[in-house]
Structure formats: C-alpha cells, structure tokens
Length: 182
Length: 182
Image 1 (cartoon, rainbow over the protein chains, first blue to last red):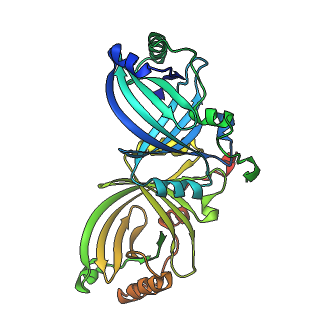
Image 2 (image 1 turned 90 degrees about the vertical axis):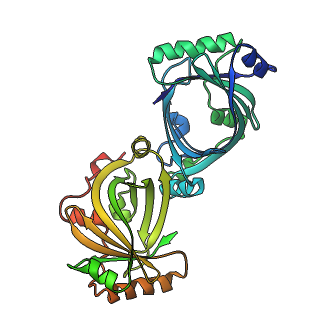
Image 3 (image 1 turned 180 degrees about the vertical axis):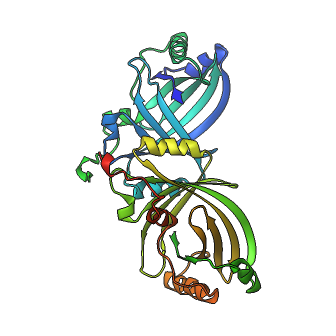
C-alpha cells in the first residue's frame, strides 16, 4: 500500500504536547534496522529502500519505492513478517544484495486524529516525529491530513530525507557498492 | 544449511513399500510453488532457485544455491517463513525478479532411517520420491545415507534435475527472461 507520511525534527517537550492535545500512547518499540543496497541499481539514486527490521514483536522485510510527491515522503511500502532475520539476510546476500547500513532507534507510537505519530530517538541523529495516515483512503486527503497534524503539533519544516539519507549526510551511512557492480 | 537430497521416479506401490519397510507417515501437504528468475543472471544457468511455497502450514521463501556434487542434488538451502505470499511476490517483482513458473504438487512425507522421504505427485510430471537427510552432520556421510536409502527402496537412477527443470524439458516451464535483461 501507499504509505502517506511526513517527518520533522522533534523539539524538547514534544511527547508532553502530543499527550496534552489528546494523543494516545500506543507502544514503545526498539528497532534494529538492516539496510541493503542493490548491485544493479544504486537505491540511493533510485530512491528505493530494502530493509530488515528487528523489533520486539518479531522481524519484518520491507521494500519502499521512490517518493511520490515533493511535500511528503509518501511512497509504496510493502512489508512481510519473517520468522528469521538472519536467514533472510543470507537470502538477500546470496541474491546479490549488499548490507549497506544499520540503524537503531527507540520509537514511541501514539494514535492522534486518524494518524499514527512515531516519536523516534535515532542513534546518532537525534529525535524526530513521523506522522503517518492510518488505513487506506484518498491519497490527497491523507496528505492534507498529515500536513495539518504536523502544523497542529507546531513542528517546522517537513524533512523528506530518510534516516538512512540523514546518516549518509553525517558520514555515518551506507557503504558505496558502486565499485562492486557486476 | 546444506540440504543433502536425492530424487528418483516413483514406481507403482512405492507408498506401500515405504510403510512395509518401517517408514512412518508424517504429513500430507499440498504445495503451490511460485518460482522467480533474476534479470541479472539466469538462474537456469547459475543453477540457483528462488521460490515462494504456499502450503497448509503457511508460506515460505526459499533460496537454493548451485548443486554441490554430481550424484545427488545437495545444495545450500535457505528458508524463511513469511506471513503473506502475495506481498512477498510484490517485493520480489519490485526488486526486479521475474515470475517464471508455477508448480503444484501433493507431498506425502515419511520418516525413514534418519531421512525424510517425500512422495510427490507433481501436476504435469508424475510421481517422484525425494530422500533428504535429517538434521545437520557430515555431508559425505549424509550423502552415503540418502544414496543407500534410495537403493533400499529399489529406486533406480537418481535424477538431479529439479521439478522446475523437468517442467522446462516438457515445455511447461519457466518463461525466458533473457529478452528483458536490464
């Protein structure tokens, strides 16, 4: 499905603000994310992502397509629950994908006005809020909704860069695989 | 892990023979297998396989590496349980893999002398027995064991071709993706 989402840097006291506005605490998760790149097309250029996420509830494989508009980070997102992250990693490596980066974060999830708010403390990057529309529906309406919620929370400029891209900007990110093209 | 396995055509009455020799019936499964090929290297030439198997107990993604010896069909096999075969198929297609063949079979599984016997009735191909060593261990010893069991069952020539390759030989198999190389 299409994931309609915006992200912004989180100022001090944002958790209290979410709760005071009526946001409902849903979960606290610890994510260990393993990113992979392709030897055929550089996902940093094609704006795709391939990730294994390990968290308390189990592991998942996720593919994300290129972003669809200029204001939000909405994109195709496909997720499959998997029983064995290590085995999945081996499958991807045997298929020619290259481990490119790792990311650890603590995510606190809230439900707020038909959106899911994720307050992320990302190792090496700081704190961010992601606002994601819940369920399916008209993408333009969902886009308006997540942008409105961002405004209600008093959050500034939407950041379209992924955590992976932000890590790269800081020089902590994914290894180049260009030299290994086949 | 390395899957140590041999396969042979199954004659009439093989199920009764397995039981009379002390084989223990373990399970009956219906498999719907979806095979994928790569646009980068033709898996028919590289002797690899990428498969989603849908069966009663759920779906699995499996990667198989090239065969390791001339007598058996032993090879690296990596399997991950997945919660959604359709979503996994979409992930593979977005990553550039190409659906190449479908295969349906009914598998009756027996345990026999430290091996698993799979009596397969394959749509369009007929009946086969696969003998697979159970658990980990010395690969040469496992190879001797599965070849011995094949002999005890009175089965003839070991067939190293996969069902996918046998389908191709009958002209029922995987679509060429060579014309679609990127």
